[in-house]
Image 1 (cartoon, rainbow, N blue to C red):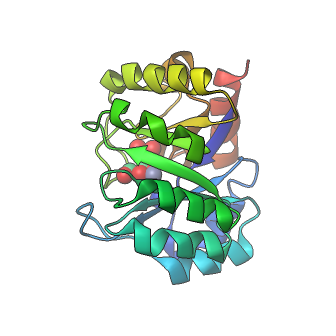
Image 2 (cartoon, rainbow, N blue to C red):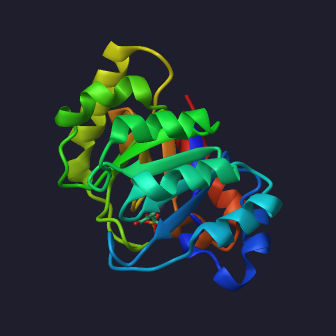
Length: 215
Ligand code: DX5
Ligand code: ZN
């Protein structure tokens, strides 16, 4: 069970300090948005490169961008330890995942809430993680979509059938009140933005989330 706080809800004027607040987490989740794939714009490769230099924990880059076939490998080459592309935007996901792994990153595929998993199950051998979005991507602080839990179960079942170590991540509206149902459905990596950075004590919020899903 791993916790990956999203810096989308952090203070963008003080990102090094904000990373320090989550040093006890497993990953720092960095949301890259391009104002095309999603209706919001955050940060890109130069900022991620700067974060990699100062982050106390590995970076989990979630790319909500068009043309990941072109851009995602650059995040892996820069040193992001996990790189997630959206299947809706990928032209050749199999080749893209292979390139991410060849650059030393864990390769991950994300699905928006209305995207079905079944057509992509045959990609599992190329993947290290599958991200089931539990909000429409684009913004932090939205309400958790419990109707995505069947998809989490479906991915977990497929991962079990396939074997190997493939993580199942949930992202969007994950908090102390929703994290347990995600774990129960089969998720094992939990992204939380506002639930961590909105808390007075971010480190305590990470610990609390972890304790709720500890086996
Ligand atoms: C949404 C992002 C999420 C976001 C989660 O598009 O992918 O990572 O930061 O924020 P919360 O936890 O506030 O829903
Ligand atoms: Zn995200």
